[in-house]
Length: 240
Image (cartoon, rainbow, N blue to C red):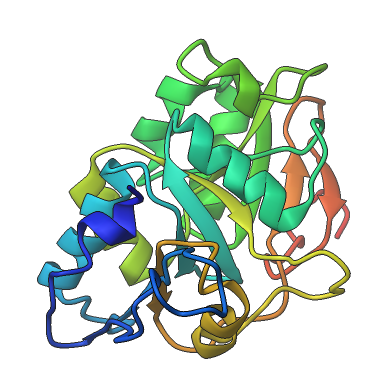
């Protein structure tokens, strides 16, 4: 039984749960439909946050807004949910997954951070950046880059994400919601529900997100190298 089916009998203001019975609807051969939570982007409703986190703890997969794009997320170490992300996005084994963290103190448990790196992280977080760092032993090897043993780290500036992380008490394993064949990520929760209603357990509607992904910074070298210019400004680089 999936996380969403275990909790499908719970209802709340702001949460839309499909009335279609997945056991009898012929459109999807028994696959459960995702729940749809409308969470306020500035003042997230605590009850809906708790419900979303309960599904994460059950091993569920969520689609949720960030300060850049919508993302797919699951609890750290959930092998099945991680595999579902891989199937949805059709990504290879060398994909750099991202840990979405509450703050800098949480980063240090999952990534090796030198003093110079810490100063840059402090300057740019929270914000729309993904930092590539050496992973610690707290990160499951299947989440690390197989050759470099790195992990992406994020500290988003988003109230819904902050509320989810505070309730969960650990990072969310995450990947940008970019579907195969698309050139830009999905930006609207209703479209995400339409496209992935049988592939994720919860879609969180926090409003329309940007179609521009994060700026990715490789922190392994000196100076750090921008691998992808995205929503995060890069004027912090020397000479810019």
